[in-house]
Amino acid sequence: CLANKTLDITMFMEPTCLLTEEESAFALKVVTEKIKMIFETNPKVCQAVDFGQFTRWAEFVEGNDGRKLRKQLEEQQEKVRDLEQNLKASKASDASHLHTLQATVQTLELKVFDQQARILDLQAKLEEQEEDLKKQSHKMEKMSLELTRTSELLRESEESRQCLELEVERACKEL
Image (cartoon, rainbow, N blue to C red; front, side):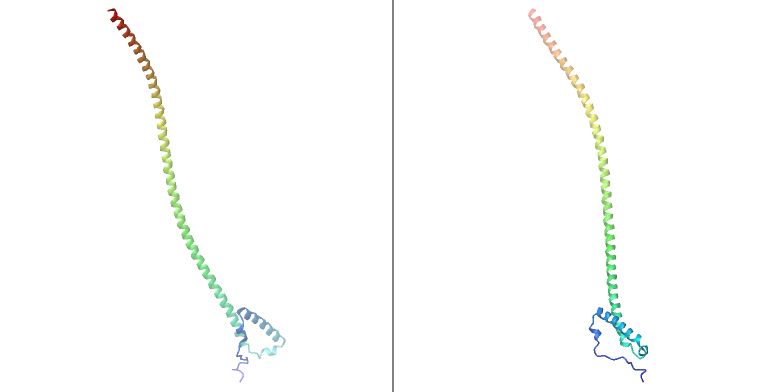
């Protein structure tokens, strides 16, 4: 007759429902220790007790802990997914910036190379112009000397002309 019946007391109000998850876990630990203490002193009573409610309470607390841990796990997994997406976006952005910077560096290197070539051309032209200037200066010195000689010759020829005019005038007077 007692084989199919439970000896567990049925309660209409479950006091553990009023506890928070943390309080319920603490109460479970306290009651577990108390029951262990009670039954260790009288092992014969242990065989007649039905632990159904106690087991369900333990499962409830463990279930709450499991739910809490699963929720924390899901939150952490979501954070990891977000961080991985941010990392991928950051890598893609960095790669794009790197490519842009490399293109800019190449462009600047080409400009520097062009400027260096232009500087070499300008230096060559400057050297040519300096050489031409030296030649022009040398020609001007020669021309200046020739001008001086020509001026002297012109002055001498003017003096000679004046002398000749004087002689012609004298000769005209003598005649």
